Amino acid sequence: MTKDWKSKLHEVIYEADTPAGKLFDVVLLVLILASIVLVMLESVEEFALAHGEFLNIAEWVITILFTLEYFARIISIRKPSQYIFSFYGIIDFLSTIPKYLSLFIIGSQSLVALRALRLMRVFRILKLARFIGESNNIMRALKASRVKIGVFIMFILILCTILGSVMYLIESEEGSGFTSIPRSIYWAIVTLTTVGYGDIAPHTALGQFIASIIMIMGYGIIAVPTGIVTAELATMDKDDVHLNTQSCPNCSAEGHRDDAEFCFVCGESLHQKETE
Image (cartoon, rainbow, N blue to C red; front, side, top):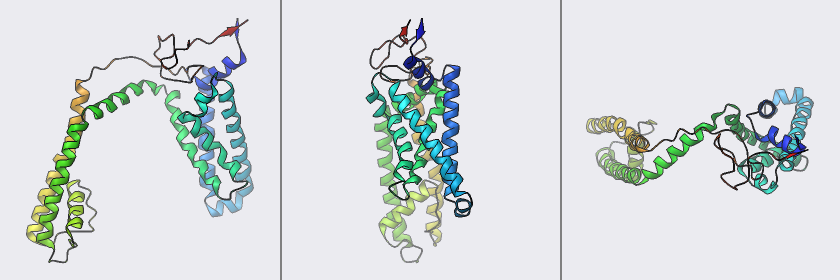
């Protein structure tokens, strides 16, 4: 009983739990990094003039390899459209086509930098898929606390409007940059968030005193949203479930539990079909 070639190809391309899969992803990441470096070097005029031919040949080699990989992903899955129109499928397409477009559109090769997004696959190699659950917890915590955060932001906007208006009354005659209430509100927001660009600064003693209070308030206010989200996270039940990198051979869905028998998206069996 041996796996058919499509199953073997799918295992190598879509799964990082096998030695071949890990090697494939490592080689892929090296090619991505190499391609990005080439694009960067090509933007350096002196280097491009001295090594233009090498850069062009190297980029074409990498582009052809990415093209083969793209079609291999399509061939090895039962429902190609699931990959083609997926996030990674679109990124793979956009990261491969620019070099071909450069034959017809001058300058489009700079879009090859989109390949940086493909580095997200490093999470599969490093087995960081287990952190998907943690990120989902954060998203749920943000969603659960959105009303509290919304009320807090509204309070901050009202506070900045009041403080900006007060500073306009105090500083508008001093030529310190508080030329209007909107501009003064902008200063209040920048100061309260402790960013402090320094493009506007109070000149009067009272204005500087108020600014000092706002700065001190900023340290406490910034911590409030973090505390709200942290409190929500603390109340959530965290299931300690380990996820692997196994990809569904039917729809390419990832993030299955180690003990999963079927895909949680399409219900297809996760076991590769074998042929004699």
